[in-house]
Amino acid sequence: MFTSPFPDVDIPNVSIYDYLFGGLTSEDLATVAMIDPATGAETTYGALKGQVDAFAGALAARGVVLGTTVAVLCPNIPAFATVFHGALRAGATVTTVNSLSTAGEIEKQLRDAGATWFVTVSPLLPQAVAAATAVGIPHNRLIVLDGAPGHPNLRELLTEGSAPPEVSFDPATHLAVMPYSSGTTGIPKGVMLTHRNLVANVQQCRDVIDLTADDRVLAVLPFFHIYGMTVLLNLALQRRASMVTMPKFDLVEFLRLIQTHSCTYLYIAPPIAVALAKHPIVDEFDISSVRTLFSGAAPLDGETAELAATRINAHVVQGYGLSETSPAALVIPFDRPDIPASSAGVVLANEVVKLIDPETGEEITEVGEDGVTRPGELWVKGPNIMLGYLDKPEATADTIDADGFLHTGDVAVYHEGGWFSIVDRLKELIKYKGYQIAPAELEALLLSHPKVMDAAVIGVLDEEKQEIPKAFVVAAPDSGLTAEDVMAFVAEHVAPYKKVRRVEFIEAIPKSTSGKILRKDLRARDHAPVH
Image 1 (cartoon, rainbow, N blue to C red):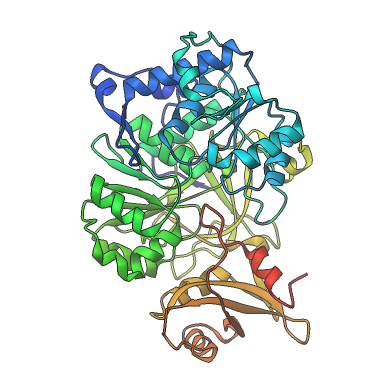
Image 2 (spheres, helix red, strand yellow):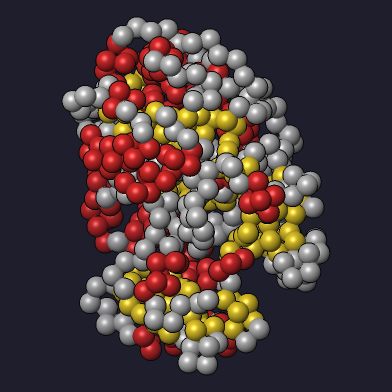
């Protein structure tokens, strides 16, 4: 068993609202919390708290009570913080919906989560109305923040003057949020996270991640995703930092906002790191204000991290986690330059971790002569672990064992310096003639090629029905890169069994909004998908 290098931290037994807003000082009240680059409007912490209270009051006046499920379909705008924390302040449970979801996907989530209230914005209203109608949510319970005929809007709710309700609940058992797992390897499931889970994870991260009240964060990672919700939104609020909201990613706009607002701290997913490392347009902007890039949501390879760090002269760290861990489980501390940026980080305070051999079930603790353990499935136990999956006791029992360890499905190794590296997903390992090949290793190698802009690797079946690695590659424009070039490059750097044996060039690697490669989409493209 591996423990944290940090002493346990005290986790206040309070709601996420009391934790974030209960201790605001007079200085905090005047500090800018949110900046809307579309209008230039700034919202102070005092104003934000007032809006959160007013929204909670408006919901309570309309019948929202402890345990009411409110769905939120909203991009990163300042109002997200108001409605998200306002609903939580009212004692509701919030299920956040991916802004790219279709009407059918939204309907499934609303139905599964039991949502009876829905909050959205006018650009997303057509799919929101279709889904709400299908599950029986009436127009007067579908709030359109920026206004639409027949629906309540944010302005009228905030100005009606209803006082926030008096609510009382156990933070350890009362559900705060239900994000839905990404579904990249299965049907999305409602992840039940309590107020204590959210408070605990911010407490676990606050002294490891060097975010301060002096920082200006570009909030591009979606707040609806657990990474953007906890490590970006809630941690920034707890540290009294300022957030510049960005509703959707566009590289030019991303660079322009950093330059215009002198952003200092960027939470990113690996595709953004790739762009910062390799895209020529980066040189056209002054982004020298950036001091830290914090990458998460999917593995970031060391080569890309180093290229990005050198190019923009910033510190690059990353963390690892899942929706089920609220999300951070491992983080590279800001003051550990000895830990490579390719690492997933160290165990957070109040957590314990195991590595388990997937073949034998044996616990792995011994470090080899090379200073690294052999790979094993990562198991995590701590106050940030979900209660379980909504209405799915079997899936919960398959994921959290009787001792409280969450089986992540990720394969990791432990380094004697105290940090972990994620090797791959158990289900994504490619087995070639009995050898296990980690797609992430080959993807990191491919990204180090100067003519490769992006890459993904999956297992496919060859003519003999044997699984082999196939690379999907986004080549640099006019590079002349061939499949033979790609295969020869990989062959030079890996053991023979790891060689890429097929290559397909593609315009873009399909990825989720959090940056995870959608391997199921790549398998669907291939003529010989894995069973």
